[in-house]
Image 1 (cartoon, rainbow, N blue to C red):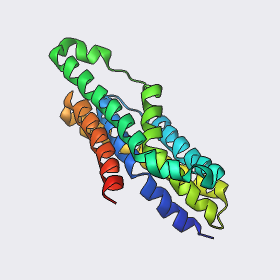
Image 2: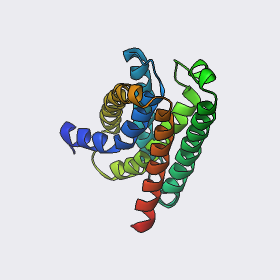
Image 3: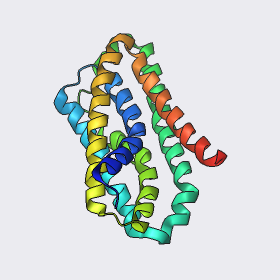
Length: 192
C-alpha cells in the first residue's frame, strides 16, 4: 500500500492543472483575501478528491470510456471557459471605465466548479488505478484533495500578486493559460 508521501506526491502531480487555473483566477481578481483564496482552493480540492473516488467506485466498468474521452472532455471545458474569459476581458478593455465596475469580488462558483471539474477529470482515471492497488481510497482522496486545496490556495494568492502588475490583461492571460492546459492535456493523450 502506498504511503502518505507517495499519495502526497500523487496529489501534487494531479494539482498542477489546478494550480495554473487558480493562478489565473487570482490574477483576474484585483481584491483577493485569504478567505477567498481558501474558498477557491477548497473547490479545487473537493473536485480533485471526489474524482478518484468516482473512478475507484466505477472501476473497470468505465475505464475504457475514461481513457478514451477524458482528454476531450477536459479540452472542451477548458477551451470554453478560457475562451469565454478572453472574450470577456477583451470586451471590457474596450470600455475601461466600466471594466472595474463589473469585476466580481467573489468568485463565480459555476465557472470555478467547471474549471475544477475539467482539471480533475484525469484523477478519475487515477482512481481506477487505485482500485487495482491495496489503497485505502478515503485516505487517498483526503491526501489528494488536501494537497490540491493547499496548492490552489497558494496559486490564487500568487496570481493576486501577478494580476496587480498585469491589470485587465491578467484575465486574458488566465484564459489563455486554461486553453493551453486543455490543449496540453489533449496533445499528451493523442501523442501517447
